[in-house]
Image (cartoon, rainbow, N blue to C red; front, side, top):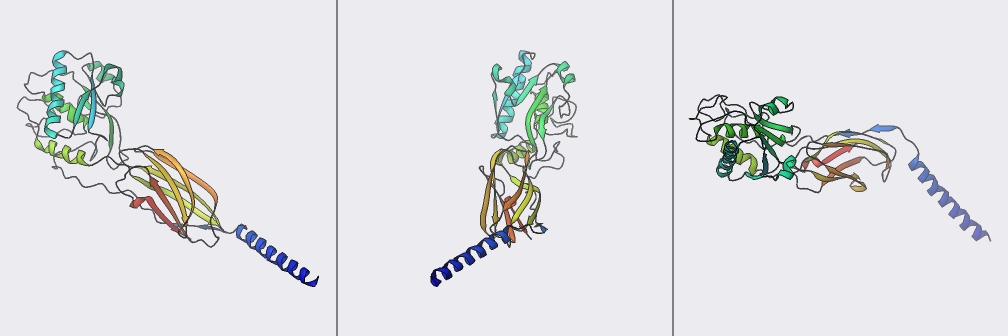
Length: 310
């Protein structure tokens, strides 16, 4: 009988100690701020271009090389033919950019929209242009400021053999500014002797030979720890050219704690994600790691890992 009592008492003491330890682990503790080392934006490759050739934003580009266009019905046959010829010249010279005409039913989805109405140009409020063409939708929060759509207005007439006005406006769509050289197609005033310099072609080849990838990174974070509980808020941005499905994983002392699906993040967009009272393996966990995982290939994964310590 005494033996049974001793065993029962031992089991009780062990159970009480275990419960006490569990209670101790989960007791509220003083909040500790985590020291964070942010690895900010990836530096884009340096694409050399002649100093005289400039863009509205450096390295400005579309995310793809197959571009669709739609020519409005307010353009006459001559204007239409000259615009198509300009597309052909740029396509033939670059051998990397390709232009395909959109069906009427898909005109709203065309990447480049061409109109021959000066009245439409006057109504345009958001066109980033120098002249009668330029990016109409873009944002510059990416490694390569991303052009989503361009517009061209061919209200000017030209009797030149080559479609110089059309090429001029088309290069504006690709983000190029005016060039202070009277012999250049990008000079503000048109002249039939002007030419499309090889510098523009070489620059476009270099810029568009870079593949379109995503680039996910931590733009901001705050985190604290109270005992075994982790609280954090992270801001995650995509500075690449394509969207990506993103997940966030938390590690403590090299052990995976939790995974969160953040869904798709578009280029130039971001998400703020907040978590309170995430239980860590131990109140003594010191090294916390935040890792981003992307469904798409990225320009760099070095900025996908953020380490913090108490």
